Image 1 (cartoon, rainbow, N blue to C red):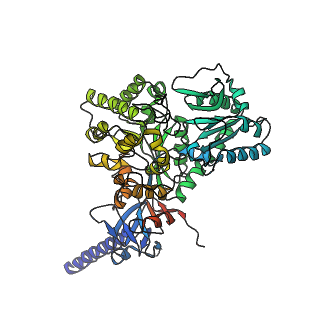
Image 2: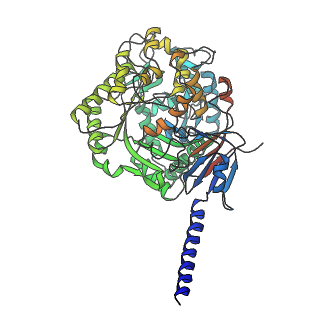
Image 3: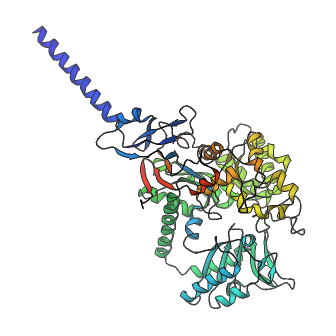
Length: 575
């Protein structure tokens, strides 16, 4: 009897042990495994591997093929990388998500050679449009045209050709930077723009020598045309508006995923847009991760800021923890706020688009409610003023630490301000592609001395302890990370010359600027940015090893897979 009880107890222990082994094996089986690749983790503990296992949307293990194969079961999706490079999911560090979707749905002038091509595209659109229907577009940049339009003011064309091309349709075409716009006569008529219309604060209506508006509007002056456009679009039904907005999200998401982007740091969205993002997360239909800066006025923030602090929402699909502000405009439109006049426009030092007291109030709201403050500053005067306001806020709240406030762009700095980023812990959220895109005319704008000392000075910033991140500012530039990475590691212009190459990043520095540094700038380095067990299984697979191939081969690199949360969201079709 006693021996029988012992046997029964042993049998129970054996069954429990067997069940535990079976449960442990089942628990450890992966949902997805990537094998036979070069896995660059951006994690110093295991910097490189052959394979990676994923379970329940997170990284289960990283190692050799032999180490990872035991995680494969009958239900595991296995991808043979065939020696290709897999890196942490690429993070767009500064872009305009809905702006990208809108730009992809309008006339796109990113690749036009001159103003004549813009006129031709507008003419074609007008022939298909109904009378009175607005013709919209974005992406032109007068400094990139192969010939100067005649007549012009500062290289900007008069409205005659656009007005003739679309006599019955208002035309509004935004500059690539988003900081200027071009309108035809019909649009100006609807907006009530005349010779006597004054410049609004922080904006400029560009006029000819006789004082007549030529149809180009800088910075806050764009709102004059914007009001007319908004008035016309009020006739849309709520259903039409919603369908349009959902399409914008879909288009932007699909485009980003095809470029290998798994997370997008959105540089300014309204409360209404954030509500749409949240609903998409609730419905399981947001295919990309969004980290969002709120682009609302101080008055609106005072009413709603706490209810819109959104962290780790929907399996880390949506985070809202920052405020977006603008200190100045863009260099291309002579809107960047400079300490000294432009070399090619001595009458101007650019534009301050947000009064300093208003930005100080934004800083107060941010620091008291636990938000990051992210301020657009391109000119050296704008950067100095932003750093001054940040430093003032930090001193007023000495108990607040590790705030990670950001300067978005930080393109042109006075040498005296470069060390302040590291000293204050302010992140320089920069875009490498702007360096090579703007490079052909930066010296003309700033002069050689200013350009050499403070234009796109990534290494100078990093050597003083600053965190420098990367992105494209899309739709100002295409969100494709590959040309941006190429710009970071070469600083090569289209003519083959190098723009102050001592400031270029190493291959690994550039990769980190697109992964772990961008994650850090969003307080998300613990969940993404490296291929570390326990982190989100966001992975980008590339056709070439961008860490080792010759420089010019980088531009031939294609995205093979974009994986978000362990799910393949994009796969390049086999030819």
